[in-house]
Amino acid sequence: MENHAEVRRQLEPWGELAGKVVMVTGASSGIGREICVDLSKAGCRIIAAARRIDRLNSLCDEINGISSNSSNESTISSQEIQAVAIELDVSANDAAIEAAVQKAWNAFGRIDVLVNNAGIRGSVHSPLNLSEEEWEKIYNTNLRGAWLVTKYVCIHMRAANQGGSVINISSTAGLNRGKLPGSLAYASSKEALNSITKLMAIELGPYKIRVNSVSPGVFKSEITERLIQKDWFKTVALKTIPLRTHGTSNPALTSMLEPWGELAGKVVMVTGASSGIGRDFCSDLSKAGCRIIAAARRIDRLQSLCDEINSNSSNGSTKSSQDLRAVAIELDVSANGSAIEAAVQKAWDAFGRIDGLVNNAGFRGSVLSPLELSEEEWEKIHKTNLRGAWLVTKYVCMHMRAANQGGSIINISSIAGINRGQLPGSLAYTSSKEALNSITKVLALELGPYKIRVNSISPGLFKSEITEGLIQKDWIKNIELRTIPLRTHGTSHPALTSVVRYLIHDSSEYVSGNMFIVDAGATLPGVPIFSSL
Image 1 (cartoon, rainbow, N blue to C red):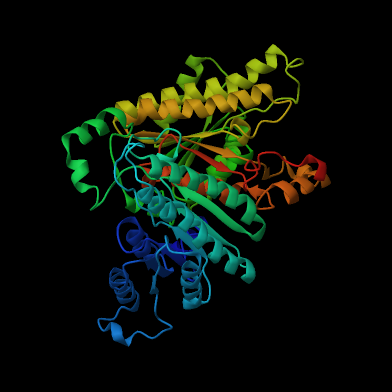
Image 2 (image 1 turned 180 degrees about the vertical axis):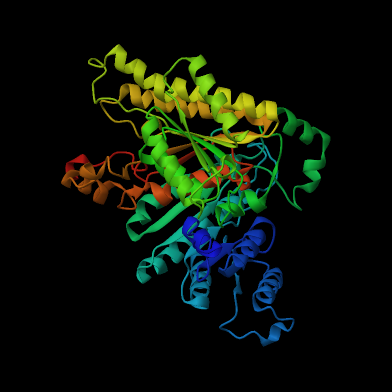
């Protein structure tokens, strides 16, 4: 058997971040400081950038003291330094930011990741009382500064031909569901930052530079501690926030930047598990320590999968019921409610609990115009993709609620279900997936009080046995080269399996009602230039 460290390395390739150089702006306090400390523990070299150099030096001394295991920090050589401080005001002029980025790059000779965390909220003012001075200050910090720092860091990344990752710390205020009165400049700057994120992902993808944003809600911190203690704020949390809680930056935010622990003890049910992505999920989660309930119509294939998982989980040739890591449950998600309820009961009884449900069963159907689509095919697609996902979730969550244990529901949707991913000939499939995304959000609202999180994943085109022939076609390669920012198609592992693991793990306890798009940026371009294909 492989040793523990090697197994962990294979399951969580991002777990060992040694050698990565990460620049964090706004690093002198709050979330920025916590991100620096957390990433340094994961093995990263840190470039801490902010205006308050005294606080940065204190942070870097703390990190370097940890990394050196020495009580005498003066003995640390330049080769042993894990963190450096860079004075940077992101609201400064172009030349000052360029010079600071050059100094940051020179510190370790590279930057692999940039976290644009610097930001200010400003005062609570109506649009009629907001001053031009405050508007400029907020926009120069939150938006222009993020662009300029990214610009100069990515110029270096491009010249070094190394690729990289840019992470913009945005806010729920920048989402179409997060606006609050008195935040005109702040909210609009964060929505503009989200737009910048998408456009940069398109433009920088060819250089293997990924750009994403994280939109936090209200988090417990020194800054918000007094606010969260107010009675009216507690009332808001109890009556309007589905999960009835506010998070802390560690692990809610830092876990998206670091490894999360093993999943030993978690019981996960996966529908559509007999082949493809569903089978991949089962195999991967079993390696992470989960007990697997593999559900599908083809029981022979399920049994083969479970035999494989169970044989890999033990050195012994005989196995008791306590040793089983995977069980097969025959389930047709397009069946009637009573049949699905009975299958879920059997699934629950297998291990006495279910912690995570992956609604993966799905059916695309034929490529037909709306005028040629039959009612029979419409019913089959919607019963499988939509009604089935709801009913399986319903009966699993009734057990979760009765057990007062909480849990995680993950709906496998598709980029066809987002407002920029529709394709001709897919009326029933596309509408079923868009409806599944809506179900995800409403379920998150309704089930949050029971500590049940609900999220969806929208994959693009992935390399698999089913798509292998398609991906080899010249016209698909032309699309990939001309319209997909990262110029590639993914494989389910680790692109999808890693997201599933994160959403099952307790470190995602503050994440619900979200849709994770995993498509190499394929749906970002608004209008594909078909004439160039």
